[in-house]
Image (cartoon, rainbow over all chains, first blue to last red; front, side, top):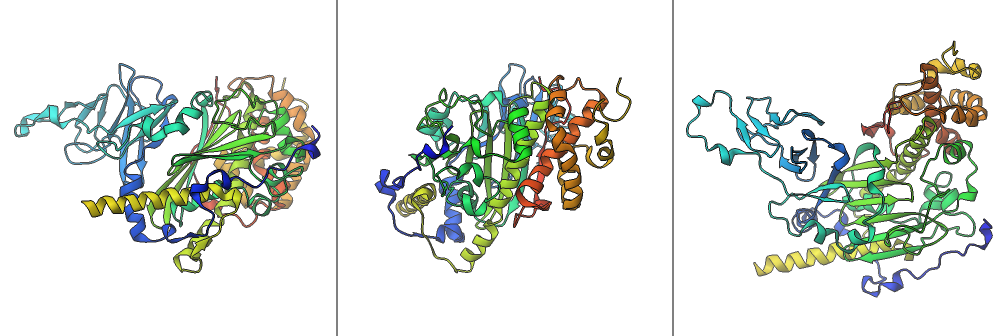
Amino acid sequence: MENTRIPVPPIGLTAKYPEVGTGPCATDIYHDPEIYRKEIEAIFKRSWYMIGRVEQIPNPGDFFTYELPTFKQSVLICRDKDGEVNGFHNVCTHRGNVVEHRPDGTCKGVFMCRFHGWSFDLKGNLARVRDEEGFFDLDKPKLGLKPIPTEIWEGFIFVSPEDQPHKTLTEYLGEQGLDTAGYPWGQCTQSYQYEVEVGCNWKLIVDSFAEVYHISTLHPNSAAPTMMASGNPYGRLLDVELKGPHRTNSHYSVWADVTNPVQRLAYLHAAAAQNVVGQDKINLPKGINPTRSDVWSVDLVIFFPTLSFTVSAGQYTAHQVWPIGPNRCLYQQRVFVRPAENAAQRVGQENSMVEYRDVSLEDLSTLERIQRSLDTGQIKEFHYHDHELSLRHQHKVVTDIIAAYDREMAEG
Amino acid sequence: MDQGTLPEGFEALEPFVSDWVLPDASARMAKRQSSSIADIRRFYDAIVPRGVEALDYLRQYKLGELTPQGENLLKLMLSLTELGPAVEWYDNPQVYDGFPISRIRYVRQISDTAAQI
């Protein structure tokens, strides 16, 4: 490939979406406790949350539990004997202990609370009460586990924190869900997951992956050599697509510039798939590599507010941010890779995880420092570059929702 | 028949087995953090030139079918991937100006050697 002939992506992304504007953006939505309180009501309670994949529970009786840090709730997901995936609040209806205390496993048809031994079947029915004779008119059919709204998209299990979801999952995912369905999500069956608590507003973590204006300066030796190679010195994006509250960044990369020995071993001899070697970049859903570029590497597919996927042709990373305060959140990163066909490919999988983790540590380094500047009022406006369009869009989506919520409250 | 701790032909890497054959990814992460860049480079410089051969050897086996010596070779290569950025990106065990890695919690890892298909 003759790299010097690849054109530099132009300025002009923001001009495609005049409604987002071009002015500075007030930073109060990044730290104001009252705005955060409204975000919980108007944004977070009304969204859906990806908490795992169907491959984690292939057989009847398989289960996993999951904490929803924003809502301080524990959820129990299982597969029942009809093959259905069910979700429940992980709360025993007797005295409120978790009904299942383990992170995952397989049960023999019932979950038994370790507190007093009440048992519930895979559909949540109260199956057995120890020493039932001592209770007073228990209405057992009404004492089953409380279901949590649970839906599946492309093998991802989503739950809603509201008993009556504001939107269906399909409505919530919208055009972004339609445009990215059909990617081989289910083929990447092996995954790493790590998490870290960061002292920053949830939007700062979303932002840290949602612009690559910083690539050449923050990632000079890691991501930059590929992403700013060959005539793209500022690491500009191929495209940004806005879809309702959601958005996608399409990234440029050129393989020919990778010279590091371990990266070359992983990419060329161990089938590590975060790179662009030998991958079909065209036969993808229309929302992935939307410009059908030959120098495409990955897309960041963002589902507002807090779920995004860094998707390449052969693997993907899921980013999930859980707000736990105006300036505190839990960040979870899962790297999903295809199963290794041989022991050499296991090395490629590990290389993907390590590279992604170290680049992310470079990203995360900025966040608590930025938050300090916000909390102390040292910065009151953000000035966004054309290729920071995703951040500007997020700002508009959040402020529009808060304004609508204020009107909703005023009207009673 | 493999006699040592590594497959035949890889005897030169034996001195690195005790330090760099580790139980899992979080142990590798911790070992990188607690090692000097000089120690990391000694292992890196010894194994990188054998990297293609090592992967050619490993490619002959499915996960779950390696000999104990083959598993050790795989684990040395997994350690190499952990160390790659230390040598190639940072010249330091730590990510330059990075977020403190000690605050990262691994929740799920891929088994080093268990069958995947």
